[in-house]
Length: 253
Image (cartoon, rainbow, N blue to C red; front, side, top):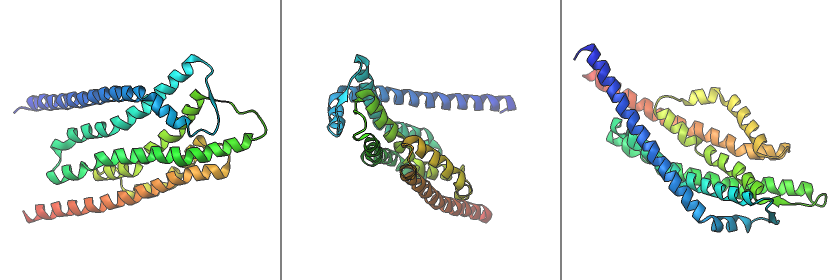
């Protein structure tokens, strides 16, 4: 095979891989659209569940407010269902380049992604949301008349819960990138202070301007980062052992 033929073959391979990846993203989008429809169909059940937990009366200022609430509900349900499907599609995409052991181990990432995402949503909704909301209600108690719109309240919930759903994926992402050799625990330790600064800033964005509450919100994210360093270290040691075994095998040959 000539050099030009090798280049053409590589271009064909890249085109085929990109086409396959595009198809998997397309089907993931279809699943998201269907999942969004499921969330929109059960919008009243989800809304009633959330509204029953509200210690005040929600109001609507325009007909479009409730529509945006239903869109938010459908979007969260769509993400919740689509993320494990997208993870499975990505796993199927990289599976041909993995050994049987690597494919079997990496398949565990798919349910782990869904579980961590759901745990993050639950943590943000049942813990962080209540902390922030009780603080805000305490500031206005007996001072002003409280009137909360449906649209803004659900936007507030989405602002609190969705970031934590993605933050809970950080340890898993660290494990995956470490297994690929992109990330090392030493690098995460060296950049720890910068990561802490970013996490504290994010904590201030997700919580009211109260120093103690901001630290309470930032603390779980810092713990997740430390957990990511630990999981990265475990995967990194296993990777070093595997590379050493491969090198010994090559030396013996």
